[in-house]
Image (cartoon, rainbow, N blue to C red; front, side, top):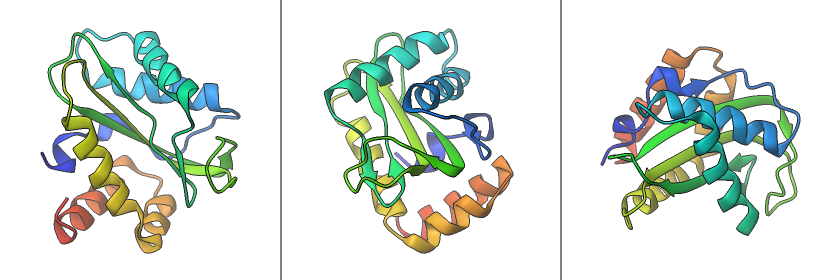
Length: 155
């Protein structure tokens, strides 16, 4: 599984305008639903919210990776959103989150979402990559950066 197989321009929001965690998760639900034929955004959002209720997915360095598993889909999908100002997300380092990567996997998939989590985490550990992604205001440019960095980092 390559990162580029999980995300498309339609599932990227370079200019996220959300004031709170719930709004972020709802926006991510919409982005993910676009990549899952037949899925309803509110169902995807509920999956993300249920997982978030267990523990924050704010991993630090202004990054959060909300994720979950859902019935009725046949592959892992991802969405990315970027906030210029940051959103309070109960991250482990207590900093507002500016980069959101949401991942949804099939309900019976026990490893696909973990692989996707690991690959996005590896890529976003690099502050240079985070800065480049945050500077973009175009989904295609974000995809180009992801593709370049994923190739370099073996993601």
